[in-house]
Length: 139
Image: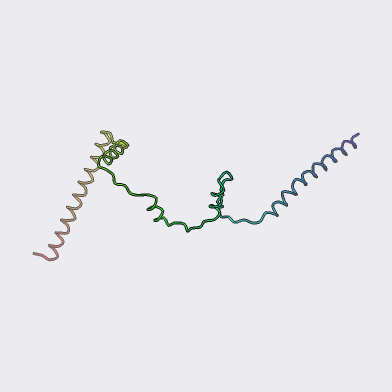
């Protein structure tokens, strides 16, 4: 009985291998049959698009406009009235995150210290340069 069980298992494995081999062969044949394609992207037009759009996408009868031509042709500058300008300015100022009073005090102190430091630096450089000129040319 064990010989019959082993024979049935071997037959089942052979059948499974045959099915697997049959499944792999079409995939391998399809890979070999595929021509090598370019790595460049291809512009695809949806199938639902009208026939005219598909033809236009496939063939172009005019050169591509330059960027300057495209932007000048598409956007016509319009004058802004003073009222519109003020309204837009108010809208932009509402978006600004204003500093708190504590932050404002800190910023003021930092700027004040920096300005005093720069005044002292320029004053020292001026005194050194003046002393050097007087020593060099003497009077």
